[in-house]
Image 1 (cartoon, one colour):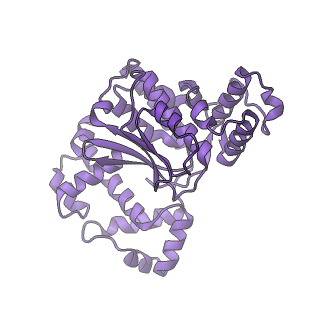
Image 2 (cartoon, rainbow, N blue to C red):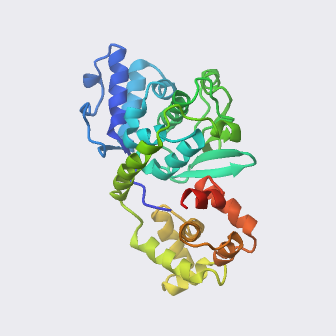
Image 3 (cartoon, rainbow, N blue to C red):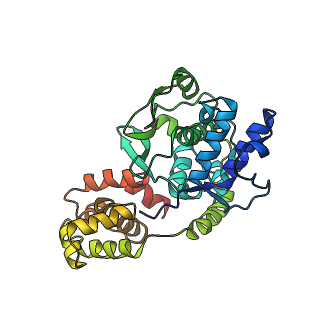
Amino acid sequence: MTVPHRRRIPASFALALYEYLDVRGLDSDSLLPISRPPADIALNADLPIDDWCRLLECAAGHLNDPLLGLHLGQTLSLRHICVLGYVVMASRDLGEALSRLHRYQRLVYDVTPLEVRVSGTAVELVWDAEHGRPGPLVDETAITTLVHLCRSLTRPDLSPSYVSFINPTPAAISEYRDFFGCLVEFEQADTVICMDAVTLMEPLHTADPAMLSILEEQADSLLACLPTQSPLIDEVRRRIGRLLPDKNPEISSVAQGMDLSVRTLQRQLTAAGTSFLKEVAAVRQEIAERYLRETRLGLVDIALLLGYSEHSAFTRSFIRWTGMTPQAYRQRHA
């Protein structure tokens, strides 16, 4: 679902940076330009991404460490990502944990939306450049933290299939390959972590199904407090829904119904951080999930109702949206 991203992260990330500097004997309170968050900071306390970028750049300068993101990310723990950290920890296996990361990412990184792509037997977690480029230190801290936490929950030698960054190639690329244990590329179209099917099946030694349901309730309540889509997106989605399943929704039809030119509607959607194709996908996903949860319609029928000519195309789209097949989604919500 497309929503307006607030470009904010948990303030507990800043606390982790202060702690990182403290351990190295630096006077972090005088060095950094933003006040230290309290140790008992609230779960929903957050920080603008621009402030986080300033903190990282300032710390990297004082440490003379251009690879600070790679180094800092290896010190963050589940407590720094608050409720989502414990939701992930209680999941059954790594694939399920990453599926919940996809669902709740806005609680820890409300900057660039996470897209899940299926490539053969592997799954790619993708953050595009369309929603801005926070910078190498921000990106590398986030990706390193994610891989570090995956290892802490499974096994220390777990490695992705490959990692790619949109940022310029650093001078010392070997340290990235040593940490990630795989091919690492820079100056790519998207930031990507790729995991193969075997890795996604790794069990979590912290799995706790009983606690998971309680934690998800808390995560859902926090997620519900975040802003949802704009009135423009509401209207566009309503009109897209009306055009399904009779025909594949066209932006010209929606724009005409809203008394707008196609160019004006495209411009307004871009300003809202989305596009017409993304909204068509969001409507289809919402309807598909509802049919799978609440009806016994077959996949062929659901595909036709969503405007797909073949159910295989619907299945591929559903995996891209959710990271699982329609059958697996239905079984999970039975």
